[in-house]
Image (cartoon, rainbow, N blue to C red; front, side, top):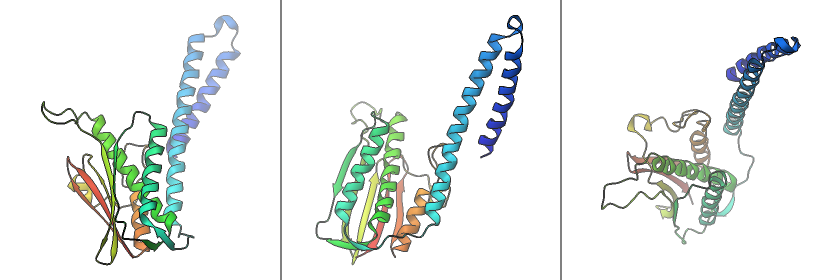
Length: 239
């Protein structure tokens, strides 16, 4: 909000300066200065818009974080839900960036049947984790790390989702082959507002909200990672 306020104040000053310049008689007006002022105003408007949208995203994230779900638990096919949100996330990112590509892998335990969950909440968690996984593999690809020595296969961004029964629980595992999470920040990933993404690309509320949703379902969420090789988020829910 400081950015929004500051750039708004600067633009007010620039507009007043532009008005003063335009009031001068024609032969005394400095057109180069006028154009420079207009360009500065336009650039500041872009910054106001960018930071306004970021503030909006943070507020929405905080509201989601603070709201208790009004949804009701219902018997849900977790395999169908997971597959649906995997496709949704992939199509969503492709709509924004046509150059994005990743291999999608699924391994669903068909013996699970239906489990009693709030589908829109668990769907939100799956969507968030898969979106993060896509971001991780895309960052690794863009870093040029796929340019491996001769004789080695090139890097293929891959995101996997699997389900299985495990000791009376259902495990949902979302795995990527990105760069992994550094050990020094691993214990912070579920903290509100913590993010490794650049300013404007993440609010740091997604994993925190996911953690709260899974806990509210009586389940657990944990992360396994290896730097340079990738990350797996593992959700366990009661059947």
